[in-house]
Image (tube, rainbow, N blue to C red):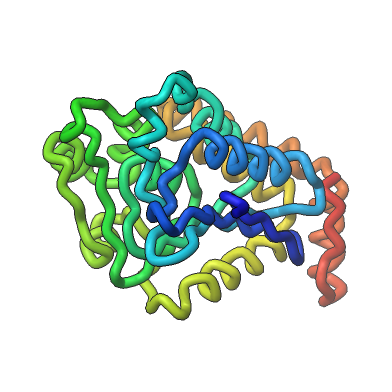
Amino acid sequence: MTKVIVEKAGGIVHVRINRPEVMNACDGETYNAISDAWDELENDPSLRVGILSGAGRAFCTGTDIKWVMSPDAEGFVDRLYPRLLTMTKPIIAAIQGHCNGGGLEQALGADIRVSTDDAQFGLGEARLGWIPGGHGTQRLPRVIPVGIALEMLFTGSRIDAREAHRVGLVNHVVPADQLLTKCEQIAAQIVKSAPLAVQKMKAAVMQGLDMPLPDAVKLENEYFHWLMQTEDAKEGARAFAEKRAPNWKAK
């Protein structure tokens, strides 16, 4: 059985973890296949947005514990999670059911998160004697209040979809039968935007979060002036004046 299913349409790449028998826990082959899909999104100009989901009743329960004890598991966090740090194109996480450990870390590596109303979120590594290895200790407190993040990390406890939405971990909570539809609607709206503008906005936000405000404003200004010289910026203005849809070329 294919462990990761990749489908492309309309500038959107769907990446679905397909190990429902283990609630989409990831082994090395699965992690590598997800990384390959994100490489393709990043390098293919026709692809604009990624949607990550899981087959069955879970998004992803993290790393396959049976596999991680094998010699093959050494260094398993060294490819996928650094790849997520360098993505310039947006990723949407479509989260249903369990979203734990490395599954939550993958969701945190996405830019927008949508969940079903039965979703559960947690980083339980402390109960295994581990520390999150996929940037969970760094990403979670950048997304939700630090105290809530620390409680989740220290205790390994989980929060439900309602609480995840309240603290800003997810953007939207929807019924299960509307999950992919909602994510596709968001992706379709992103596809309408200029690709270079989206990429530079993502870069400005992600880089700016780690800068003092004056430096971040300077970075934004640099990106603004760079974009204003592109063909797409000129096309956007023409299309607006001519009351038509723009023809983006990512140039």
